[in-house]
Image 1: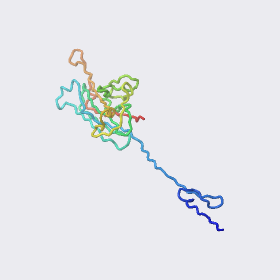
Image 2 (image 1 turned 120 degrees about the horizontal axis):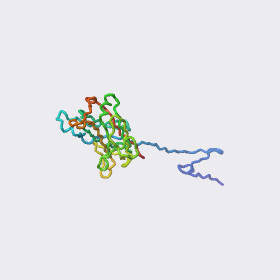
Image 3 (image 1 turned 30 degrees about the horizontal axis):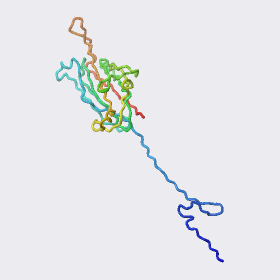
Image 4 (image 1 turned 60 degrees about the horizontal axis):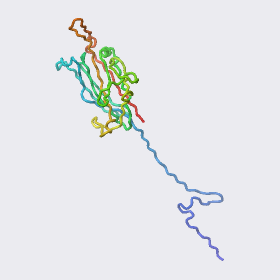
Length: 253
């Protein structure tokens, strides 16, 4: 009688079995692994300031001056810096400031990053130089936001909810936007030549518009009338000052 040993094809074929007897009490195994690479990019929140129209002057004395006596004002915005999180610089220049007149410039702020955020505060820092302080002591400063088409005073140095007022330009002030109309909430948008690339309702949260008003005080009280007085401002004549205003924002989750 012949014995035949059958060959069981496929016992060790691919996907059939993963273990094979290799010796008494021992096994061999095939192993496999698959990997995944992870790329994580954090978002950005970055403010940028844009100019809005030309600076303006108002007051009783400005109408009396000829061309030589008119003030010269300019407002420019630098490009957005390459450093993430740092906004650009807005430069306002005023020459030939005159007692009795007010000088106003407007600008708006947008979010050029990828995450939404809000403008929380605006800070004003006086020029501490001795001569600058002499000039700034003769001037006031106020900061306002345009809310539903109306310029609204932003409260300064406290967030208790009361209205802001004009303060001496020789002091340091913080303007809070967390009362009444709330912080200025900004959605991120790309901008072309200062115009947000959005449409419809999406544009309503693209920018926040502000204005700054410097007033050169005029303490003259009817100098030509009986009992009138004139307070000399000669000490402030021909001086310069360079105070700064900073818009501060925070990303909101």
